[in-house]
Length: 393
Figure 1 (spheres, rainbow, N blue to C red):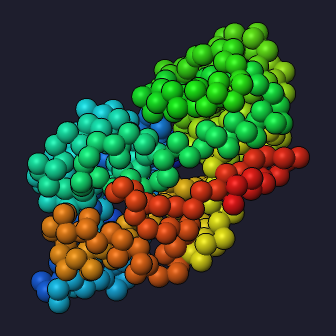
Figure 2: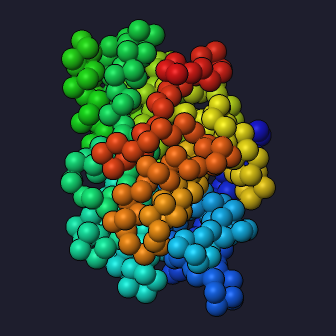
């Protein structure tokens, strides 16, 4: 009965997100500028999945931006003697790279956005083809390290690259569970690239890949067959990931089929969201993944969690928190650059924007810019005896 109630809650949340997505499917905005002619408006673009299986993920990233915009607009901000507010203009790309490219062009042409936030690697790659020519910054919320290898001077990578995770993930799992690994990540390009990064690390450390598969979460909802095939190979550890909700259900299937080993979780899936789907951390025992934002000891961490509760009944995650912090940095960079419309100058002042952040805007430890990407303090958590434990501080 309890599990039926949990399923009802999850389905209810999914329907709510779809309702929100309908409002955002063409164009939506929050925190619009005032009517005072002396006050300007800076349009900030967003193209991400606001419908479909990744809608929770897209809404989380967008919510962080709107939270920051609402804060900024309480008093506005001044650049070169003029007062401004920000307006978030969001478009649904359904997690499809070609839609992202179309949306980005529309945002620039119709709204003159100096920066467009894109929360998936496929969309970022598609937009990098033309963003320098059309003169706008991509706020890239993806941990794909290849984003920074393109030499694109107007791409800002927001989260840490996932290549920081395979070594500590593998060390922890091999020590605790063993060396046989089954790969069952998301079938997206991001999942393929993540897998290509972790495989050689696992093998180099003496591990064995006993199953190599993937799941298309946009099409598949029944994971019995693939998990049965994977577990036939008797793995000690599973490698999984993608959006939190379907990833949690994949893990649930593994546990229901008797798997008792460790789980390496790609950084897109979040412990704090999967815990809601699974009704606790019991099924996540032995899992290793990224920072739950509620555990943040940065100056603005606890305050962000409280602010999030004021605008959502959902779980605050890094998607919301890092995009919230990123927009505050971008506005501080505009002030330091003395312009709201020159993307090159704004990019050149991102480091200064970080230095000028107020304590309450520092949700996680951000130390500077490296290779056009935010340089965060890396933190990795594991579930041990039903509790989250920081294994890399």
